[in-house]
Amino acid sequence: MGLNDSAWRLLFNKYHILEEVEQNGHFLISAAQIKEFREPRLMTKFDHKVNLPAIFSDHHLSILPITRGDYMISSFSAYKEFEDLAPKVQRISIPPHIQSLLPRFLVSEAIALNCANACGLLHDFLEDDSLVQTVSGRMSSGRFEFNIHTAAGPKHVTVNNSQIEIDAAYEGIHYLSLFEAKRDLADDFLIRQLYYPFRVWSSRVSKAVKPVFLIFSNGMFTLYQYCFEDPQNYNSLRLVKQKKYLISMDISLGDIKSLLQTVPLRQEPEISFPQADRMSRIVNLLELLNEKAMTKQEITSQYAFDERQTNYYTDAGRYLELIHKGRDKDGNIVFQLSSQGRHIMSLAYRERQLAIITQILKHKVFNQALRLCLQSGQMPDRQIIIQIMRQSHLYHVEASSTYLRRASTVIGWVNWILGTVED
Image (tube, rainbow, N blue to C red; front, top):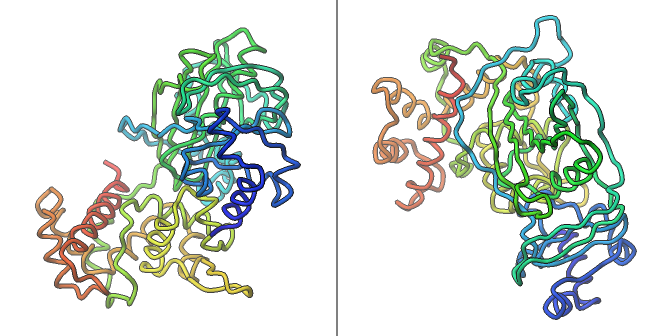
């Protein structure tokens, strides 16, 4: 059990929080009360639903700040799943005279936003003229009220001088666009990150306010523009549009075919065959570990993973010889980039992608599946992939159901490789 889980269970027991929520529909808790067991800033930051402590998840609860030092716990519908409208990826280029915004240097949300602006994609996405970067950072919310869905029906909430944070704001002729930016790939997000700034600045400017979510990982910018159809309703969020922009890699089909001809196959390692369908999330994890080593608990609590996913994706990185698993002086499991992983993540963008593809194609299953895909022009049938897997002496894969689940990983990774190719 993590430190947040333990501390929140103690708080729930001490203050009879479940009983209060059942009776009154909510419980108000102060930062001072939370601090009796752990720092509030560590105990109240849950950017994704999966990050919530177990006692919150078990009872379908969430927490929202209402003042600078007070929080409300209730059965809020506080999160929103990302929708994927499957837009065609638009290729972009970093201006040739800009050397400090290359993909391997985009190590923070702020730098990623600067790169997006320098590449012209913000102007393209926002459809506004004369964009100027304006407000950012932490500020007070002032006072506003709203309704939010709970299990017991709509709840009225008053916010008074809570702290909000804006990653960036770009103001043009017609709109003020407020950005929340992330470097981790996730399935959902906390609506509050868009809603509180939207309410604050809608009362301060006369022009329309656009809430925008930007996600950057491995050279890909994904932007989501939202609107609140009823500004007084926290849950009236609607996706207006989504676009994806990819920094050009200049990888051709010939490059992939050349790797297939030259990459030496390796013996299967004594590590579970991957059950991690999204190679993009593995690369994203490599980017985060490139900044610092992380314990299993840190990855689970800070990244948009549950504990099982942490195991799957770190094992996938180990399978590719890019992540090393060890222990710290206190005996905690720690993950860091292997020497090969550090080398690959230091490469220029194009070379980094090709090096990751090389690590994948060293394994017979992926190598053969990609060959068949290129020969026939379509992904091999799952049963054919399973047949290749059965012939590849995989470590601890025996049951037919296991082969079927792992086949999804093969399809996912081969599709990721093909996705790096520019038409």
